[in-house]
Length: 208
Image (cartoon, rainbow, N blue to C red; front, side):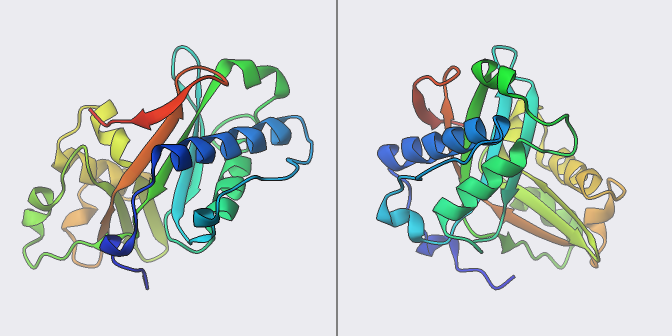
């Protein structure tokens, strides 16, 4: 996939994480109102290319309302945040986000390490190479591709084998396709920052 090693990516500090969520919120607010987001105030570190996902949840029930992102570092973090936030407002699984919903949603940003392929001659060993609560997964087979963020496995209380199976399903394939050597499996990690309440305090989110 032509990506840098995850060890070359620096961690985000708390101020950068907060700024990322504020950029996503600013963009979402503008997009839902069909407005221009205006000037995006981003630190210099946001010029580095990073993968990122922006997730919108309803509040307080925390139902998924939209989630769009870019797993590979093809855009600067600032640009990726804006594009992902705009996309999350138009997630094809849901109706377009409306302005009247803005006061009852919370915004979450996941900043990713570059994906690394998990290689195992014996495919049955793959589950042991996936750390639930730490790794996110991407599965590719031909034109099919599915991605699940690290927090999804813990939210649904999946073990690593179920996580692999659900990533196959997300790709539109059978749950056992990870056993096929023609399927490529990648893992990545994420730093997650989120609003505690709509337009409220922002903090680092720990995957339980």
